[in-house]
Length: 267
Ligand code: ZN
Ligand code: FE
Ligand code: FE
Ligand code: ZN
Image (cartoon, rainbow, N blue to C red):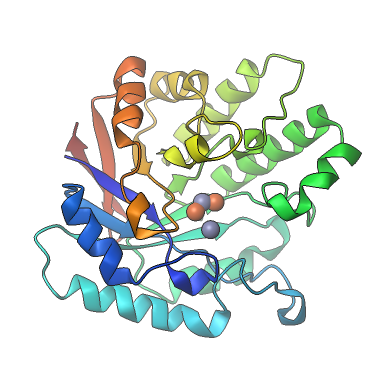
């Protein structure tokens, strides 16, 4: 019983394929559930500074919701869920609340893709890594993730070690950072996702690291599964490896959501 809860659509401007194609592919992949989680509008920037092609435009959010709700009403043999991948920005939490409460989301995935305005996981801004200390970037990234987890806005923490995407690693052992974050996530009653997109980027590793998942299991943090598909062919991509990872760590179930209430599927 598997659910893919991290799916993008072409509304964000950098994914391909119609929603129906993703839904069709869920059947091919034998999924029990599919959840859309497109990028929330860049609410943390003034409209003039929002970059097209990074996230959906604010005026498209209602259309995105409507389209997923229409698919939900078509009664596919597997549930379709309305999710959203929302960036956390400490200074713009009111704007985030307004967007999240305006729509009937089944779940909200919280992400960090920016460190003081720098899109550290965007290949376009890869050069900026050379101007920064990897140690400091890691500290900033995990401090933001902790804040996001403690903020109460989110059900699921996205790709919890996305900062490793291009293979930059700090010298120090970060096990203590993982332990601290897992505790915050547990106290917030959130899940973490196992996201296979990391296998398709330079680091070639699932997000998050097994060490972080072990800390999550210790604090009884539930997990969700996501491909982070930006193309219909990527629905449930590499879930065999994700399952192997989960079983090795000791997880036997995954979480699912309906109207922001958590349920479980046995693996
Ligand atoms: Zn994307
Ligand atoms: Fe993301
Ligand atoms: Fe994503
Ligand atoms: Zn993502």
